[in-house]
Image (cartoon, rainbow, N blue to C red):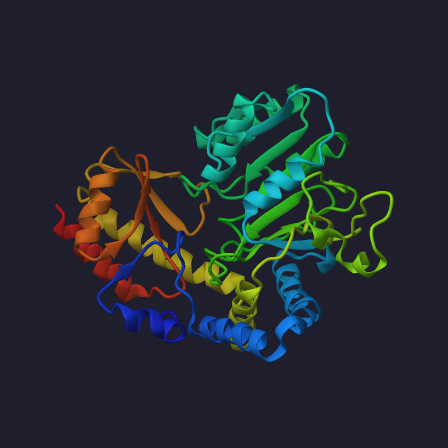
Length: 390
């Protein structure tokens, strides 16, 4: 019997004991200690007033950088910048690319809405031309993407670590980085939101070449507003879209003839932000450090519950999802949600919601997010509900 972690999320379970929460890939339950971190941010603002920023910049953010660098196997935590959302980083990094005419961008047809909507609007405005490689069929995605990469000339390459609409894990991130080492004109960005704190991830082999952005709303268990980017040295050194924190260290010296930027990740910082999410983030990951719980442990726990769900559906209710197709299927690795493709995704989502099971769907994709706070009994309860849908 695997270890249960429910006691660390007691407030969420007490708030809605009958709710079966299988949308952890969307809104992850907060551990109880997150509330303590949240309260400590308010207490600091009350006690220190303006001086709270000294603690934020000297203690809270360095602590968060240390956690993130350890999770991603980054040797230098100073490459990390913070923002309320990853969209801010996309716009800021893009603004650093100096080229006449539309930017040439290589991406996929499975990037998250914030990237997809923004780039389509840039295309409408004539700022960008985007080539989107289909992620399906999954078995040869890597070869098709690398072929497109090698056949074109690109100002930006933007891809996900784990694709949001399938859970499919991108198999060629290192190959992309290696190929781009001979392309000094190409900015490379990895959207890591569905990988960070879910899949064991090392950026050691790509950190010199790739921006990596993610945040705390999902598997990092810290809620909204806690986003970050790793900034490789020498890339996007003077973004046009900038904020006053990008040169925070030199503010006391006044404004010079040229706009100055920090040399580390601070060059991607914007303006005044709410630091509260980072108090939550630190409280959560201090907890897991004390408890000896690693991302490898979390992934193993979740993967075992996912296998139980998939096997249970195949064995006990093969028709309960109305002939839905498991994707990516086969031996392809996937992230911390199980995805089924079916024309009835919306109807199934509503039927499950009526049974107090929270999932979500995107188009014809029904997604079940499995988390650290699930144990075998939760999977069995879900299987019982699914069986009753037949």
